[in-house]
Image (cartoon, rainbow, N blue to C red; front, side):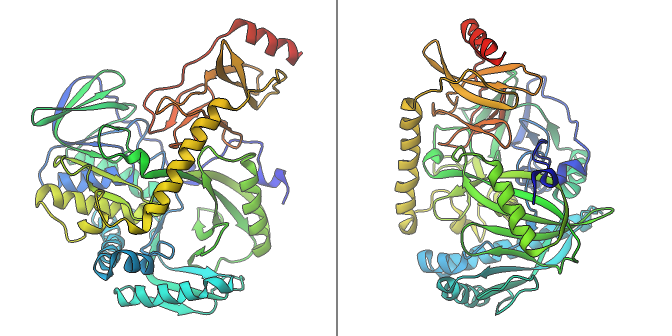
Length: 521
């Protein structure tokens, strides 16, 4: 597979975004009030608004960018209760009752997404599929067998199989039936119109930068200094951006994964697949108007950590080439996932003493069903005060015995990158070519310099505005990424995704510009 066929010269493009219209809801330009404010217009936020508005609660959605463009527009869009090898792990660490809650919630989510699509006459390529976890290693056979046994015992239609429909030799696999896949934006864009018609106010390009509690209300402030006053608030912004409570920066970390859409000569056999080992490999089919494509995802790593990130796309292409005869790879993109310490999302009250502030985050790589679960749980907590699945997802859960090691490891990793970023020597290379970037000292600070394809320089301070970590260059997507908490910025300093709420400071050191210009010519 060569780079011409992979088209690494162009910018990554998500198939979901390319094949749907961009939304165009207004920016918040005046102070408003609402019963409930939902921060984040991805799948979780939209579904929360849909269900809460259905309870007669006046609801508003506010998004930093465009509706369903960020995380929900960069997914693999599997609607599945199969989340890797999760059920036997939950049962062993937290008990069968909580494992049963997790299973019931995600199985219900699959049915509820279809119910919403049908009730609103939304054509979103919803297709029933079986989902497989397979292994090619002897050491993982026992884990696959245990997962099949436990999932079946919990009420999921799961079975142990010795082969899969793909031409991949496996040692063992577990198959979940009655799962599904869809086109997420064909679902979310019309759903947004529906909930807007039902009275939910929607605002785009309105980043919330601060939330304060005043008496019995919350005051949400945008970067344009407009305010929303609400009795209840749901943080569905992927990574929570407020730090006053919850300590989420210490119990969440971000990973990036990569996705390619390949046009293969062979007929795709159906099904959704993921392996049980590293490096991760995930597959599903995709039908567009003219071609049948196969989505292949994997190559996960912590955000802001890595070298030439284009190598991840190349690795996926090589894997695809071992299975299919590839004619083209028309789309490639990457995704960012919030990971919890024990593998279970945080859904519920933001903190024990915030009865009117809610959180939905840490979906791992399973955001479709987790978004639906979030909406059902939070709706019930607001309207009834309880939900039958709330305990396993409780953000303040105390059963953390299995995640103490991860807590130590992840926070040591943050500390390591915070310190190493401060002391790492800067470059003395002033000959930065078009399309390349480097970090150079300027007036005693670390300055990130990127030269675009037209030769123009873009210079920013590379200290993350979230908690002060030093950013690293992402060569695959031309962005500055934080290795500590996952914030990402464009080469010109604008926020791509949080938890940062402030852009990077732009630099304009005249002497540095002269050196960069001189060496260029």
